[in-house]
Image 1: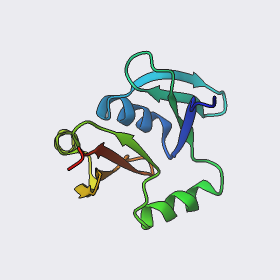
Image 2 (image 1 turned 90 degrees about the vertical axis):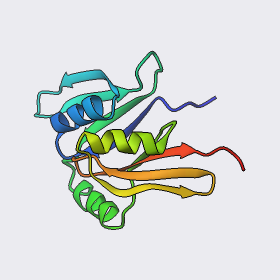
Image 3 (image 1 turned 90 degrees about the horizontal axis):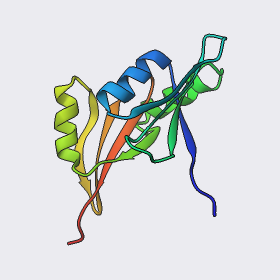
Length: 132
């Protein structure tokens, strides 16, 4: 069986991303290792012992800037995170100063909202809706 262990999102500023993903979004810091070249092996994860980690990867490679800019220009989220209550999470994050490009919007079986992570990405939060 194959399982997701690590996924990554490119960030323009790893330290700002670390603060945003932990202090604002609520993930816990898992690893923060100085790689000696100005970059870090920086991962966050869900609070608790779940083994899945998100790598906040430096956006230094030449193809990353145009890729990120294209996604943002087209309003495409780099990734999606699950929430239990999209409206409540939206209100909590707006209260913390997070900017959204899409407020909570019902789309059939899911309600989504899209936020700016301050590090070059749009991030979607998604709530699965109860069947009607």
